[in-house]
Length: 430
Image (cartoon, rainbow, N blue to C red):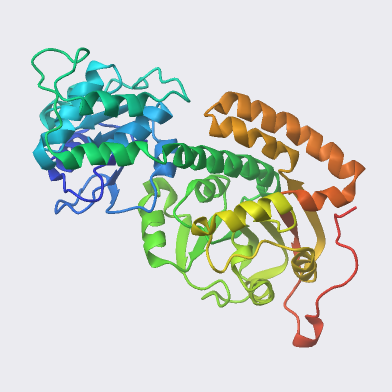
C-alpha cells in the first residue's frame, strides 16, 4: 500500500491531485490510501479520509509514504526507517518545508520531490530513506545545525539553508522534544498488539462461512480484513461515527462486501437475536459495564458461539503504578479486569479458558525505550517462555500478568434469575 499524507493544518491539493491522476492513468498500480486534510479536492481514484487520530497503522502497512515536508511527519518517518518521498508544501510559512528538506536531503536523510509534476519519476525509489541508527540524537543535531544560522559547513553551497521564520525553528524544537516517549509508545504498543493478535489467531482459525462480531473495532482494519480473507462475514461495531468512517475509508475495495460497519453501543447493539457465530475484541471489555455487555452479547450471538477477547489485568502493582502516573493516557471509564470480573464473564461462558500474557516479558521495555527493537523482541520472546513455565509452576503468579486472553463458548440468553455472578475458582486458573 502507498500512504499519502498532507498533514492537518495546511491544504495541499496539488499533491493529492497528482497522486489521483497517476492512479487514474495507471501509473500507480498499488493500493493507495490518502489523508487529504482540509483540502478542497476530493480524489476520485483512491481511498481517502480527511483526518485520522493517528497514522501509526497506515505507516506500518505502507510500502511507500508520500508526504508533505512537515517536521513532525518527516522526522517520524526517518526514525521508523520508512521508505518515503517528501514534497514541500509551497503554502508553508516562509518556504521552511523546502529549506528543511534541502538540508535533510543533503545529509542523505530523505528523498525530496520539489515539483509534484516530477513525482511519477520518483515512484520507483522504495528504499528506506536513511540507514538510521536507533537511539542516536540525529534529529536534535539537525535542529542545532539549522538554528546556527550562517554556520552551515555541511550544507551544499547555493542552497541558502536558513529557516527564516522563528516559528519554523520552534516547530522543529517541538518535534524533537518528547520524542523518545512517543517513539516508544509507537513501537511498543503495535509490537504487543501484534504479539497478542498472533495468540488470538488460533481461536479464529475456522471462520469460513461464519458471522463475526468485532466489538470496538476503532480505526484499525487489519484483523477484520484477515478474518474476511478466511471466509468470514465481519460486522465491526463502534460507538464513534468518526472512527467508523475512518475505518471504512481504510478498507480495500475487495474486502468491503464482507466487512460491514455498525454504529452502536455495545450495551444495546442494533442487531437481531442469535445472529453471530463468533465474538471478538481487543481491549474493549474493560471499558464497558461487563454484566450489561455480556447479557447483550449472549442475546446477539447464537448459543455455543465462540468468544475471544484480550483484556488488561488489574493486579500487578507496578503496572497499576504506571497507570496512576500516566492518567493522560487513560480513559475515565477504564477498569482493568479483576478476578471478580473474570468470574462474572465466566458465568456467561461455558468452558472458559484463560491465557495470561506479559509478566516477566515486560523486562524488554527498557530495550524498547532505548530504541533497540531487535534485542527487545528477543528478550520478550525468551521471557515469554519463562512466563509460561512460571504460570504453570506457580498459578497465583498469573495475576501479575498484564494481559489475559479470555475464550470459550457463549451460553444462550438467560433469564434475570439465572444471571447471578458465578462463584468458586476460575476455569483455566489451574
